[in-house]
Length: 564
Image 1 (cartoon, helix red, strand yellow):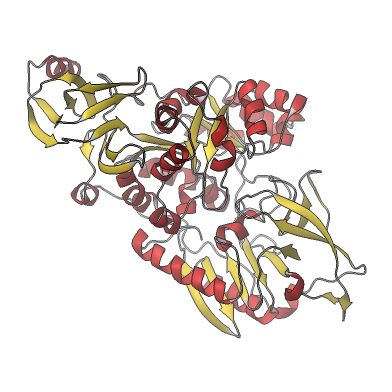
Image 2 (cartoon, one colour; image 1 turned 120 degrees about the vertical axis):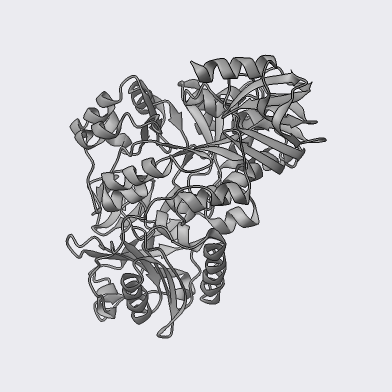
């Protein structure tokens, strides 16, 4: 009652506001009008706009345009390669005040303890981290993950203050064919928010998927696909990550009519791309540059996300709303000057004042020692299934190539860009090793290996030289996971990710520097991809068409079955 009365008194001007933002112009995204006057803040809540206020603290925002804080509506913080605390420090100054995350990367390695780690961390960050509960751990039965999470494991986690609902339901065949385990999870969350994940699904199958109560979708890669999903009641999240880049394809669909039903997300974005381009601020500026109405772009970045996920306390600079505010010096370019997260000015001092929690998932890489002989591909026919990379997308082509058999092995052929790919089980479960071929890396020598390998996070390795592949894979065990580039028996560059083999304990600036070294090392091997490491990670995700590989073999995702 005291807090309620305090908010009312400060909003009326009967008491000094805790914080006043003076001199700026509010852009109201509901009426598309500019509002002059102060913004009064009590604690974490806006209590007054459009009037003159006095406050215990006054911050000058003269000449700046104030918009609601940005909401990343779907992401995996683990893909930033840093802890939630470093992600906060990296991204909140760019205007992201709410991040709706799915911790299924760490959950696939250490189970519910990984989700609990994010839930506990969310209490200490400046940005508001909302933790969805991971729905598909593992994503399918065609891979070996470190953990398995069923409906009974999710029930005790459901009522945490950070929660909204169930995270992306990747096992869309399990939904439409009524798999009992999938049904149990959907039933547990019936009436609550459920995130979608159904690439290329359409027609009656999409009807069935949406009928399950699934309300968001971030996997649309064409305007036509996105339009059908909007027509069937789903909110479409425009994605622009480090690998999955769908903004240009979906931008024509974003208008002032559709903006209330379209949101923005990054899904997987690393500190190198964040440093070079930005985060949601980059997406807003790029949408406007491509011709989207600025009002539509800013709505998609804030108000639309708040409405889609039931966060009625944010998305508008208005009394009673959470004081998430971004102050811009350039609206069209989305140039961020100041950020306020829950009424707290986002500064170095504010980050330094946060409490933190100990990391989890240490010493999680329990892979077998491998040798060059483990990367041979034995076969008795030359016709070969080959994963075809489509740069900027996580969907792949299912190619067929004739590869000669030499001494019982199909050898990599750099002249044809046919590169060996292997997945090594690293959770200490069975020691599986599967091999195949991939086209699109441009690799001419050496090897690249990673424990960031969606979603099971086994070791993924591509290479021309089997000795280098063994060196890179074994090095990952020594450094508790991460990325390694090797050539001619030497490690050229590496980044240790000791938190579940996914996240560094270093500051994001250091991680960014190591990623630059890794990118340069990869290019020295002939790699032509802009983001080879995350591109590699998605080649092992058997819920994205068309051809992928796990530790159990090649997966025809269109048929949802192992083919070898």
